[in-house]
Length: 208
Image 1 (cartoon, rainbow, N blue to C red):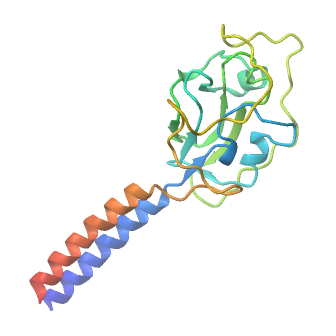
Image 2: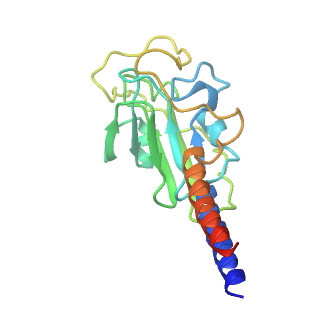
């Protein structure tokens, strides 16, 4: 009877840890284009976020070339005006950047380099405290200021071009499949599974 109880306990621990490892979702922002100035008007981060579900604990991966782009969380008003006013946290200048969603509600991110934000390099999402609520699509585009001021002292961007995923200092995070969220972090999942397999193996060895 003690051996059976041991197997039940080991199985329960395995299920709990595996469930925790699988709960976290990694979202590759922009999928294939990464975090860059949208190459044309038909591509936008609002379209990318539409229909996706973002939950507290999920991770946003911003793939960009260091010294070419950056990412900053700002309130809604600053997002609409493409300014750094009342920024939430510091500018992340090294790519790729991983940001963990730590609170429910609306989250807004912009690139502060030159006029990149005004050219469409900005992201707005709604984060839920629990799974099940899809991110609603943005029905109206943000208002562009009449006389915008560059949010950075760096030169204005040239014609938009898709980001390059190779070369020195480039993004190293794996791109997710277009149109969907990336799968949970495989390293964390593999570590949890390996740990549980060791526990189960030890339990079985003691029993038999």
